Amino acid sequence: MAILITGGAGFIGSHTCVALLEADYDIVVVDNFSNSEPEALRRVMEITGKSFKVYAFDLLNEKDLETVFIENHIEAVIHFAGLKAVGESVAIPLSYYQNNITSTVILCEVMKKFNVKNLVFSSSATVYGIPEQNPISEDANLWAMNPYGRTKLMIEEILRDLYQSDQSWSIALLRYFNPIGAHESGMIGENPQGTPNNIMPYVTQVAIGKLRELKVFGNNYPTIDGTGVRDYIHVVDLAHGHLMALEKICGQTGIEAYNLGTGKGYSVLELISTFEKISGVKIPYRIVERRPGDSAVSFADPSKAERELGWAAKKGLAEMCADSWRWQSKNPKGYEELKGMKALL
Image 1 (cartoon, helix red, strand yellow):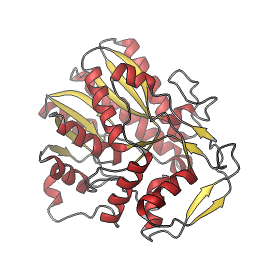
Image 2 (image 1 turned 30 degrees about the vertical axis):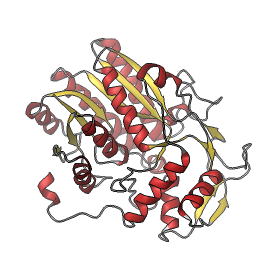
Image 3 (image 1 turned 180 degrees about the vertical axis):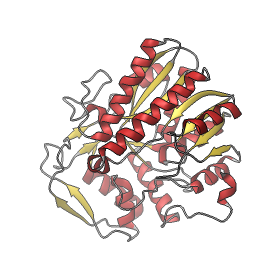
């Protein structure tokens, strides 16, 4: 029995591969490598000392996906694959709806055909929009504010409809807050293509001199120092959340949403200050206008995940910063493909 991981070469996917392999699961990875690198999977194999099958194709290709299920005894699916940049989703919304939603429908159709009904879905705290109160619990109002967030929310609704139509499914909807950090080895981490969309790779690229300065969007929010407050979670903690969710869904039926966050908020300036102390590198930054749709404060109530999954985040902000810096300083150009990588695919 194997666990299929779609988008397994990505930032969160690769760390989840490590968590599952270290827990003695067999895995199979499908990734089209549109925003990830095969090198990440080679390094997962190096970290764990274990190998696994890798298929390179797009989930929109139903026939190729069926081949995976024919060639492997799949017990459950962890579904990461999808386009993920908020700004890009505003510019090319149809691509996001086509890719993220249609591919998920195809995945579920193939799962149903092969009677595989255990699914962990990679959702997002963006489904909460601008939160009405903090901490945010799973029963808060849902109203995504951009096409990326709406694809996550629409998929959640599709999966709820699927469960209502066939209650032999078991589905976990994992709503992440702000993943940062990297594996403690420094071998895998966040590897954005082009200018980073997320704050931590932007900070680390300023630290190594790849970018000149960090833009801080607004300093007049009603927060401790005027900058936005977010719930940053270590990617390794997040990966273990997927492991705990997987163990939960394989033992019962139903559909539940879980927040994966620390339950603590840190401002942008607190993040910068902590990173500077850990790295010993000064991060130049410039205050610019707020971005439309950004909330002042957003942090999770993760008590449901602790209660029902037995999961809680363990790593603090200092460790997140240290691991992010180790990854970036050891890999200043991110992943560099090695000769022979095609043999993986």
